[in-house]
Image 1 (cartoon, helix red, strand yellow):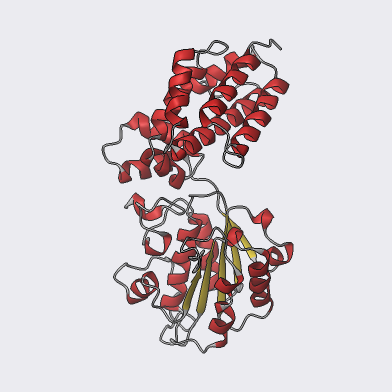
Image 2 (cartoon, rainbow, N blue to C red):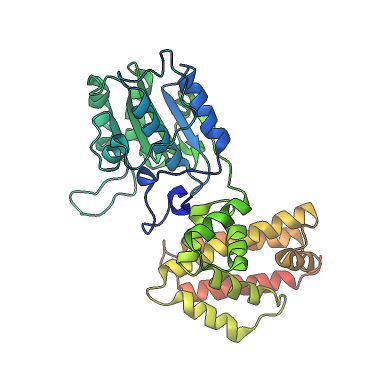
Length: 369
């Protein structure tokens, strides 16, 4: 299997979900969709949830292809033939090719579009993007079967767009299917959530992420794949992003610094701060912030539970448990989140923010519980 075909929400280097013929790691979720379709009990709207990069959009497009491939007039799926047990549609299949090229008359995808005035990609899905759903559903299916809409992602809809989609959910025609992809379903309108069948995808297992990484990067050392899987929190999209952006090197530099707490190598601290704080290092600073927040989260979880698995990171956590109180680490967590969130908003000096956060960690480690 080609690991690159599994990724959702991934960098542009990898095929987008609509172009991915393969899928892995969520057999249970795929079976739920297939059983509903094969049993003629298919709800008209599904809310597919889970963290970024685990395959939600890939699953939505995979299911859409399946429905359009076997659900037309020519299909005997609902006749005497046995139900299809697999949602795979070959990349050479006409349905696959037409969907990938935005040329299938019975398929509509809703995503953020380019603002005609600014010529830049919008950060949200606006009402003009979703108005097409009403007209699309009013048409007779071109191939006599289903009409399918994928919204990726529903979280990006503004309120007007969400209300327009809600109207479509309230009055769906026969054989109409809407698949909403959501990273944070709690942000969606409660009325919208209530009209969808929910399908939650779990994070991928670390060993699955490792295999997919090795398939994507055959020359990747096993230790690198292991560490990237650990840092990805079950998201192959996140693991690939870290690999592409040098995140593992940045993580190791950060761990070298944190490993000496409560002391800090001031020279190394300033070197790291200069590296990620310089002009043009926007992505590096964002990656640093993500890595640091995740590390602090794992530290706090470890301290609250009292110990862990005994790997290198856990050994450090156990030592830090004897140096700083849980309350103090929580204070650092809040301060770090606040500074990182406001850095771009009020144009703070990224170099100084990096130094300030790491010095706060050193101070917390000097306060014996």
